[in-house]
Length: 135
Image (tube, rainbow, N blue to C red; front, side, top):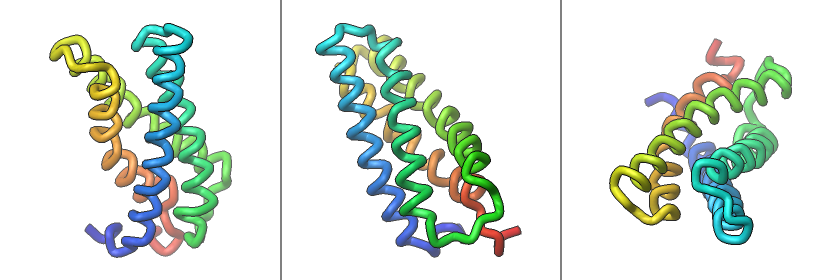
């Protein structure tokens, strides 16, 4: 794939994604263990928190060298649409592994996050931070 020629961006994306994992998992654990939220309610809150954190880090670090014609707001909306798509993958995977297969919620959530990672990178790389030279 042509996008992977910029491997430094991919590595930065993985670092940001790792921080997003920590945000997601930290909030998920806080909500389910301390505040006793159900898995169904804690997960979307944790996912949304990670989405906002990841956008900021990706915009101002991972893809900052790209010359883009879209506004910050438009990139945020695009990122959010992509992240919500990946978030649905995360959420569905969590629920399937937790309820259908009986895995511990933290393991199921981790598998959901992993399932969404590549979808996130590919869609964001091709659409949200599409280089002006790619047009």
